[in-house]
Picture (cartoon, rainbow, N blue to C red):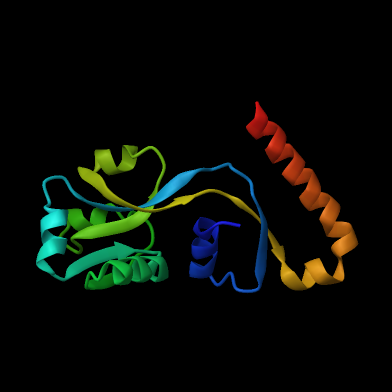
Length: 151
């Protein structure tokens, strides 16, 4: 169980869920991105407060707090990439796979917060009450992931 899936599940009220397996699929990264030409490093070093648009406010808040960066978070859904283009935000925090959408909107990824991949998720209560039925399913998934990784 890795922190990546845990943080994103936490973002969406994933408390009470057990993550027995990283499925190693749908891999992407949680990234900070800014408009091309924006001096992110300099802005952070100066201690300037950043406006950051994201739907992952808990993850973003914790990330910037660990770095000691002061941010105003703007919770948005949908086309996050538009926020810097219309002057709503200095940066975004979002999931990035290929980076094509960032590039198309003249944004660049400046910092990786965490790698992300799909997780098998099980309700803890169900796991306790129906362990005999659920465990073989988890084991089958684990075997399949292991076989795929060994290729």
